[in-house]
Image 1 (cartoon, rainbow, N blue to C red):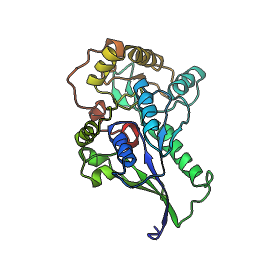
Image 2 (image 1 turned 180 degrees about the vertical axis):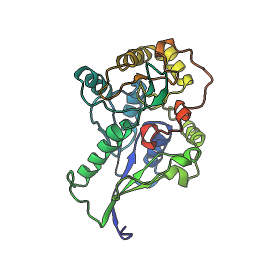
Image 3 (image 1 turned 90 degrees about the vertical axis):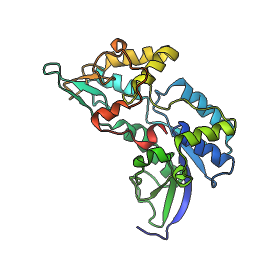
Image 4 (image 1 turned 30 degrees about the horizontal axis):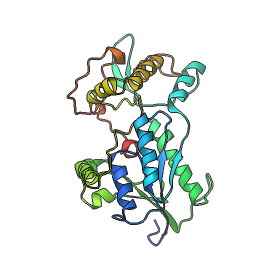
Amino acid sequence: MNENRKKILTVISLGVGVQSSTMLLMAAKNELPNVDCAIFADTGYEPKSVYNYLNFLKKIVKFPIYQVSKGNIKNDMINSIKNNTKFPTAPFFTQNAITGKKGMLRRQCTADYKIFPIRKKLRELCNVGYRKRFPNDKYIEQWIGISTDEIQRMKPARDPYIKNRHPLIELNMSRQDCINWMKKNEFPLPEKSACIMCPYHNDAYWHFMKTERPSEFEDAVKFDKNIRTGAKNIKDNLFLHKSCKPLDEVEFNKKENDKQLDMFNNECEAVCGV
């Protein structure tokens, strides 16, 4: 790797969660170095609160916040079942109808609907076309909103021309520190940023959605039923909940703190919801 490369773009990877929003607001208040822009990858199936907070952020900052998208992940998945086409893979829970054996699908949704659309926009901003060679003497600095309590999620960028930076780690800030900073500066706190149907929701969040966001919960219930069978090349039944029960039949543990993904020793990508 060329260590004498020139930085040509500084960008915040914006998930509209607590950590990435804190980074963005700190940059807006000049408590972090200048950035050129932020990029939010929209799956088309985010909670309404995410879009509301994104609009709030756009009014606060002076640098552009680009909203990019590969498409609507919900519609893409439902249409793939109806048309018997390739199913966009997400980490849904699986159960064999005969043996009852449980498992989990491979996670590809973050790459397809988050990472790749952001990468496409980065290349566009740098005037480097698709599949064109990125100049060896230049690089992009991408800020990722990982805090000290999630340090295990740090990883280098997939592309050599992107250099990930973690300002919250550099400032030794935890998620609670981010919340405290927002409160101190009188900014409203964002709600959880993740797709409505994300299988990584824990029981406490499913319960919150059921009681506080009933229309979104009903949408997730309907989606859960629609994906049960028929996905191309997937023989097992698919579920949003680790119990492999229909979502509207689950008795949620309202005090659960562990993520569903811990059951399978899996992790969500850092860019998905920070």
